[in-house]
Image (tube, rainbow, N blue to C red):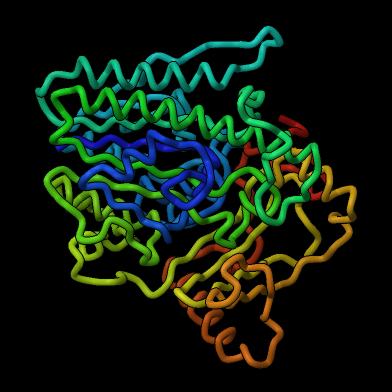
Length: 441
């Protein structure tokens, strides 16, 4: 059996199959197709790009892999041989990368037999035309599927840039006046224009996914190719990306395994992206690697034998553009986020530049202190807006969740327990007073 791994950049759950009013007909069709399971309570292990991808592709928590920050800023996997593509390559899969990976440097893509041609499409200003880039990625992946003979299994890793910033100019039929920004984002003409660009980026992503999925349907591999669609973390808005509430860790996740009809079309059980590696090993019939995996296979959920496979999921942030050490635990009923830093002021470089960020800064956001611990009761506060950590009625819940979080950190050897974590030699990290992540890049 083959594996097609389709993934977006900074999407969160902003597609139609996850309940958002976003135009994604191709992903909606994939979700509705026989055999596809939609996981509606899936979470990234880290709401920042490279650490989240490291967790998915190694089956381990980011601090276990050494990927505590962004690859393009100098952070590296401790052992590049312990990845899904390297494992599949070692057992005879042809491993091919199309587009964005954001886990290993382009000059050291261990685990991949080849990379499809890059798309060098620039605007007149010399910037990458990311819409053209993603169209080229989709075309390359589609051509591979069309031409690939049935001479052995393959792993096609197909990563798109969108809807990462910068967003494209809004399509003509997307009215900025009616593009209401996400919850928690100031509603202004500027943020509505920004949201129109985001919706356009998601639309472009959907079209590119459609090209690849249509190519698969027309290829001789359609009946023996497992398909995953997911993303790394939430969208690039303040309070979303690089945050440990569900707005940051919540991800779209859809899975189709040939010959297996899921017992439920939609699955609401709490799952983590670290659960994908053991799931794939079982579904592909290839077993597991010789390194320990943190995840739990999703087969009991797909088969209908269980309503849940885990009592909690964990997530973490150490570095993004700047140092912001946080850890979290989430259960079916509560979530707890803890900051491991003496400085409780915001880290503005960890918020992508945008109209919404400008509005927050103008409103005094930089002068506001954060809370060491945030606790949310998901039973009546699913949006995680009301911190009850200091409420005496939640003292027992807080104590229990903090204890469970500490046990996980100890069992997984989290270096944060020993104190602040230094960035690796040669890496680049923004200072705390840097307003923008672009400073120094």
